[in-house]
Image 1 (tube, helix red, strand yellow):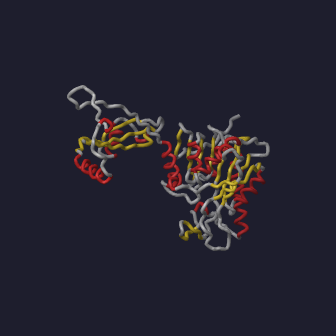
Image 2 (cartoon, one colour):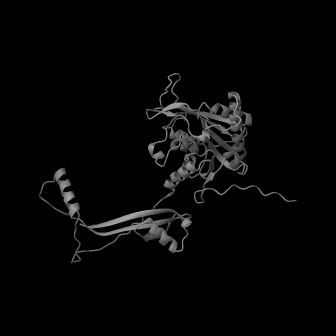
Image 3 (cartoon, one colour):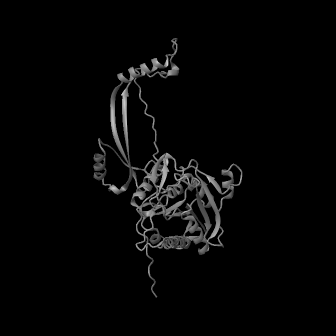
Length: 380
């Protein structure tokens, strides 16, 4: 009897075997169906809120649209009454939650973040599917944007539901670590964590980006080093970045190439680790071999210390008298597999360096990063 070979996942758009980080492009429901059953330790999901309805909100003191993109709009050509739309959204939530439940290990758990627009559907779907509800976390955002309509309380929280795969699951909870993190007290289910800092958005913005501190707490609380973490709606890649920093394996699924590119930029910022090996270069300009202390500590002077203004003036005069004796531009190619310098060359431009890299027998795909260093030596 012959058995059919299982359908395999498409090639990842990024695969780091060393750190076990993989990014996949595609529809999450289609990709989740291709993952093996009972293989994932932890899932964090930030699904579409279906909030992009033409409304307005306040951001940085300005009135802006709440529309986040096509991915946040419910796509149904036969969109009927409001009730039908709500039922369709709930069925979508049931579908992806069931797919996540299938790939979770018996003791695995799932975190889902959302506002009131979607989180109640998610919680009900979890109950229908037999998840074991563990906690509902209130993530409090300091300094939320004001409510422009003045007809509601200011929205300042999101709810994060934590659930185990089923009633029999013995989920991971690093209680002692969370207590230590909370200064020796039991950590409560109300978390005050700032939205993403400016440095977290340096490569671009995602409208529902979660702060790294939030994902790091979730991963530390409910997983261990080496565990496999999955994010079916990866967005800007915060889950994968937290997994990388905390030595977890990660799989990220994302429909948008734009956000996959953003994720890759954020990941490579942490993946690059340039180790500078400093060697001592000894030379002497003295005619005699006797050592002489030429440092400031070896000089004596009866003159009072110069004022700050005089020092700045002398510094400018000194820099004007310096003579440039050597200048070079060097490019270092970091290997895709071993994260070491596989080729280094002096070249005036990046194009020249790339040409020499190819001439040396390397393929352009051999390098993951290229680092440019410029050195100037002045005669004082």
